Amino acid sequence: MRLPAAAVPNLDQNSNMQSLFVILLAGLESGLVDPRFLRDWSERIIARTDCPQDWLIKLTVSASEEEARDVLFERLRETDEGLGVHYDELLLGFLFLAHERRLMTSERFILNVFDVFDAGDTILFTPEDILKEASVGYVISNVNTEVLQVLEQLGEASVPLFDSLHDSGIYEKKREYFEQ
Image (cartoon, rainbow, N blue to C red; front, side):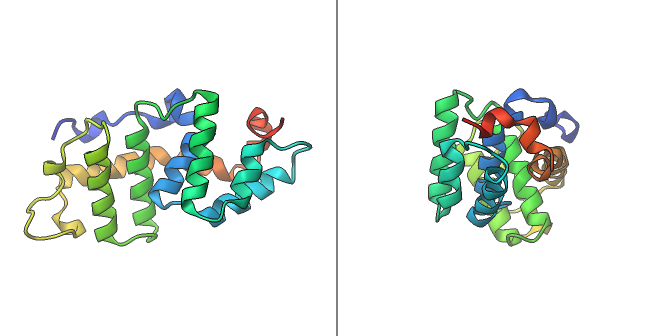
């Protein structure tokens, strides 16, 4: 274990984590939201705009997770925002929330956590730290207690970011994202 659970970064205070596109992308990649959610969400925003930006229209007509991901990555490139150094932690937090809300099985959750550590730059702990015993399998009871504590704290830290998508005032707060 590299960092104790108390050393989890404050995602809500990290400027890159305030990016609407980063939040939407992490929600999509974690399974916390799906293309249907994104279509409904973007349609609600479009209904409030006079002249919506192209990315909103593209998100509304995206038929698959891959198309929605492409729209969000394109927008991140256009705005030079980038994912930020704590994206993996946000993704892990959203994965925890998705699992907690029973949007995925424990096995899928644990495999996704492994994928984040295999592909990402997170320094919280190593893939070898995740399971107590490799031979037992991908069940929550086999996940190292400290790892679960970190994932739970990341989940708690990511709730305000996810909830910001449901904020009735999001249009007013982030108008520059939506209007041309």
